[in-house]
Image (cartoon, rainbow, N blue to C red; front, side, top):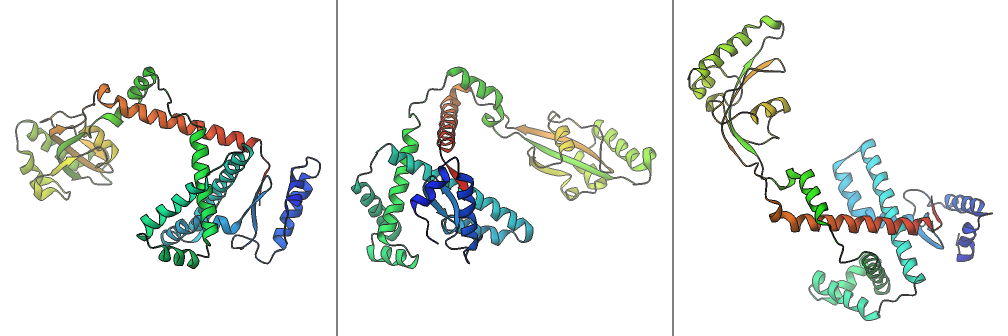
Length: 333
């Protein structure tokens, strides 16, 4: 069934908007191709414009193929639904921007689009126009359709730029605050050179576990000068036993949280207390430390200002798009 602008505009009338929207939904459902896999079903109405399911599928097809190679069953279905919902929202926002462009009586010179097409042929097809045309035909695109899509891309880019100032100012106090609150972003990665002995406990021994007693005796020998690597070779039961308990350089993601906390509090040369974890007993020694140094603010100020300008620009974009949505008639199916 064909829908003209007069029919679609009924949806905007406050008295009959609900009836009209139901009519459109029922009419679309009556189509033999309606549904997630339909060809011409209506996915959304944005003022007087229609977005079809085929447009949504065309946008998500590459990402859907990737999802199908990674997931299956219910998980795949949920991810595809979320992907299509996000894509539909992107198409709605895109249509709102184009409509605002027309409402503002703006224009894109034809040669802009022609230059864009030339760039595509040069960059993606090595300057071979025939190869470009054959590719378009294989994808059921006409040159006219391709130019229309490129024109719309230019419009969206231009309108987004128009509504975000290029010279957004970032107060120095904001930079200082960001630096204080995100110090981990500006510090080099902290690492410790670690040796460790693991003594497996006995599950039913409780507080009188003889394995814990042995671990305490081993620690006592280490404190009085015994070689850590030799003690590890004799007593440790983890995979680094033959290496003298040598774990090499580790960061804060290498070990479990309790062991990481102990390791990164030790000073070079220091032996830890007995760490009881998951029915095992651990003794740690840090031989050296590196990284963890905080870069000075003056060295990262420009980077922080750039980040904050991007955040401001994103917020302005979201506010502008939200204002377009609030003034539009949008119906999804």
